[in-house]
Image 1 (cartoon, rainbow, N blue to C red):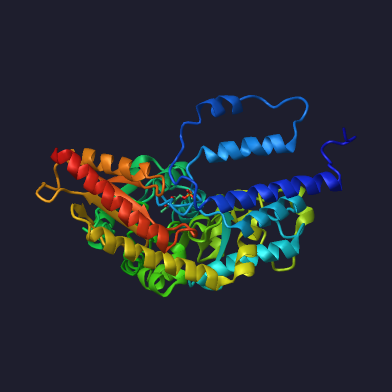
Image 2: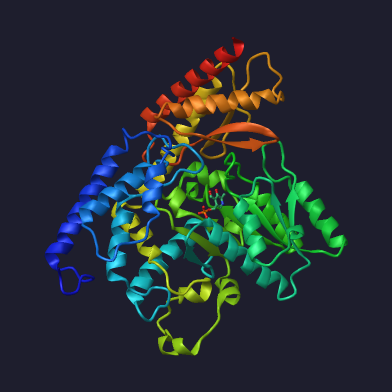
Length: 477
Ligand SMILES: Cc1ncc(COP(=O)(O)O)c(C=O)c1O
């Protein structure tokens, strides 16, 4: 037994590292053949793992086996067949960055303790602001995800536009905005009545005329409209709101424009995405989620704000025990712009993959996702009994099985589609999820995993075709 068990010696560290790398390589190599679906029956394992830690430690190999078993009984969010919800990433280089960041464990939310590392993170944030066309006055923070970014965005807009008496403030969303927006408004102190849901066009985008009318009506009734939240890719169907038109309206009405680009933002790296997200460079703030569109591991989100000073005003609180850390070198103290003080080094998790692979690798992968989405849409439109109600703006294809002679609003079609989804997911090769739009159950294919390529998409279309044919044949019986 080592004298200081919390300080393993070189040989022990190397052995642990080698075993962990072997585990990681095997895990990644197995993704192509692993079951795409969830393996939710983790019953015995769950009970076993709810136990407290032992007083004396166990072997690393034994623990690695437990971790592997637990990870196998989970949705394969990193696999090529995962086309459900919003697929996760998990770039290997990002995992290595996390390992290095954890071992070096520098303090990066203030500039003085680690200026060169803060420069790394600043370069990432600057790059993000540049990608979205924000001016030199902008800055951002790296958050744990889109939800926390939406929260800081709403707080920043609230402080900037309403000051301390904010309860008459109203903000505008559509029913397709992510639920984290409603949660963020609640956490930011707004009562539920402050969040106004605006009608959508048949394409599920904000109806700008309805938005204008709602703003005028609310103002006439004494409310203080202050914020519009547009989606650059809704979670349901990937629909992109008409950001340019909304930006015109916000400018005329002096409202803050926040764009939730958690799902779709990084398509801006591609020519097609740039065109579809037109106007995003006019936003006052933008939520991005590198753990979606940059394929990074969970825990990597970001908020970009056009006027850094507004972000700072909403988040800065001083303390004398930090006086020794005054920084004069021009780098940001990120903690002054965010709710957090101590935190993980998210900047390295983005910087290392970007510098190792180059921006073009990300652009090409996202272009590939847009191509694959076209393949899915074309393929599904050819399947008899499949309705594709909306053409995808980005990489979500929503569809529904509708038998040729059926009334599309027949509620029993929901049951049929639940059956189709079960058949698809039983294939073990792809995993899809559903949503409800206009009261109807809708199935969706979301192409965003960096491991999903043409072979799996061709297979997906064939599996969906078989599942629909099978379900229709069963109902015809
Ligand atoms: C459009 C949109 N906004 C916000 C979020 C929340 O992001 P996170 O899960 O990173 O907190 C999501 C998550 O899927 C999303 O799709």
